[in-house]
Length: 207
Image 1 (cartoon, rainbow, N blue to C red):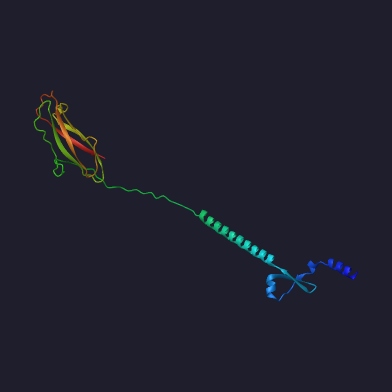
Image 2: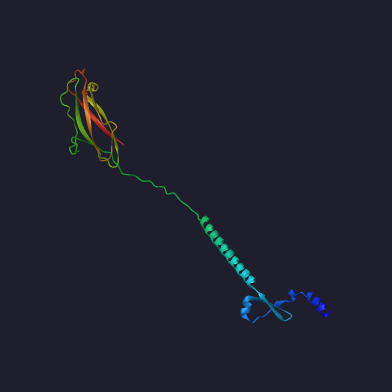
């Protein structure tokens, strides 16, 4: 009867409230067990499971901390990148290039003998005669487009029965470039009362 009452009394006691951590002097025992005391009696249980849980929790905490740190660093770099400001300004400029247009006429291909006049010699009605001249662009930094005209005919009646043409109309000469030009004088077969003539040949270089 006394044994039955003792068992009933023990069952009614809340051992969880009464249990408290025990002080264990054996360090090896503490590393392998979790110890607590009930009514002054020390009880120890193996604590491998608890240790593994603690280690796992620490690892998770370390991983989470590392992820948070990486996110913060990434945000910092993003803020730095997107906060960059670009600006520009336009500076107007202008200037001039010193140029001059000059066209020289020569009697030789080496452009060493300047030419100022042409003698056509004796002509016959219905005949034609040619003269070769050499043109050189002596301009400074300008290309020249060539053209040729005649003027100041004497007598004026000679303009028509006598014509002068050439083969370089519209030719473009670059600075220091030279070209051979053939002038052709043609006399009409119906020309009359003209025994001599003079005419100016104007060769122009246009930029």
